Length: 57
Image (cartoon, rainbow, N blue to C red):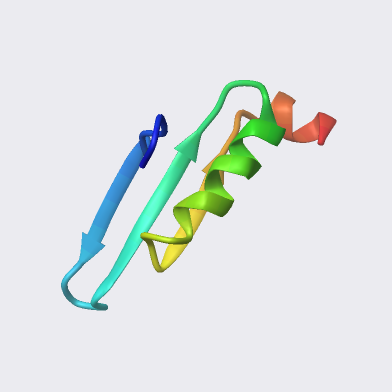
């Protein structure tokens, strides 16, 4: 995916869906940009951030 790598990618056989998770300690805007791109290859996309970072969003 160009210069991007998905941090976690999973496939559920039971539900027949793919899931991508972007992990970030900081730079939540960058995580959002990446997650928008990941929608091209995953059914569900999530962003995981630590609680202190979420409090600043």
